[in-house]
Image 1 (tube, one colour):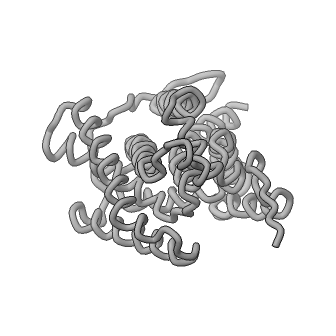
Image 2 (image 1 turned 135 degrees about the vertical axis):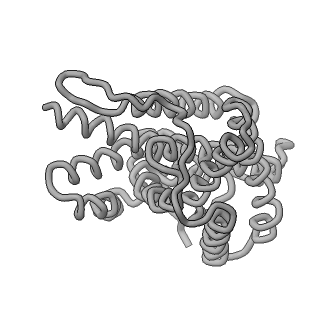
Length: 290
């Protein structure tokens, strides 16, 4: 029972970070229809940005996080304006290949400035361990779950209650109708990119703190795809469910079976979901008649 609780804490905390990364994926897909393959690299850039501000330039932690958020917003907007906006109207394969190339460029830039070895930074979250119901696990896993839950809740409220959130939902449903209502689709696209970059930055900082800041964060970012397929490409609530499910599946298989199959367990789950529900558990079913 104690091992089960420990693995559950690890799985939920990993899943919470995956949900943050997947949230950005869903934001971009809902507003622009683009499938972005650079989510892991956005986690990497986010972690390195806060590391540079906090350790290299020795800014206070709060200011370093603010600098990281501002940089994430700027990067998201510039990528949308300079790289992706000119591709509007192009076929989906072209846009996907551009995002794959973007992922390679972002990873190369990070390695150019920080090298290929993992870097260390002062602990942002507590490093001590905690015992509960016979289980022992790092205390920093609990704040990760709490922070991710708060961020996801704020994003959900933003979409449901704020004027800009409702505008983003309108653009996602029908761009032409949104234009007739006076909504700037280009501004919404830029906002979606900026918010997606911020969610990736938060996820990258949390992941870097509980593991390490290195190019391995991009490997973890690949698990975003099983999350969004499970929850639905266009479903924000789906990321909240899909993240913990994928995180738990990997931890349980690793603990009760073998670490090797645990690496492919999320992708086997992805295939199973595609066979049963191609649009995900919460995705919107779209039927096109030609």
